[in-house]
Length: 139
Image (cartoon, rainbow, N blue to C red; front, side, top):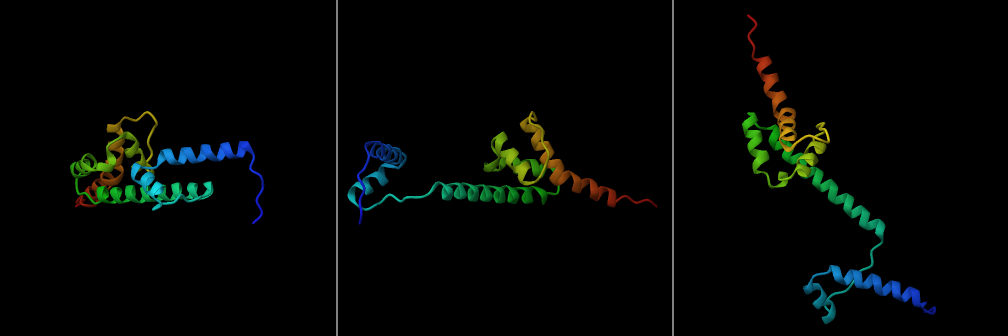
């Protein structure tokens, strides 16, 4: 193996990277490293970005499942109950993620209540209106 002399700046940069990495691991992981029971793994940044995108795809599928549950409701009240009780829909950001996954248009300045209303009307309201039109007796 051919070794090249290490430059001081390179060594400082490497120690800085290792310090940042060690500051992000848990105490348990740190102790396992010291005991020789754990090891650090090199990973390129491009793989890290792919992992983040994979997590976003998982999130989209979770929100689509929630949208399916809301869409299967018979009444608007049932849909509002699901939205209120769903742990994944506690913040405005969560509601916006659901609207994006369901392709429901919202405005930037919509309140949480307005967003909920748009979700319910888009996923349940249209179905109720359609059913009432189908059941009209024109005779």
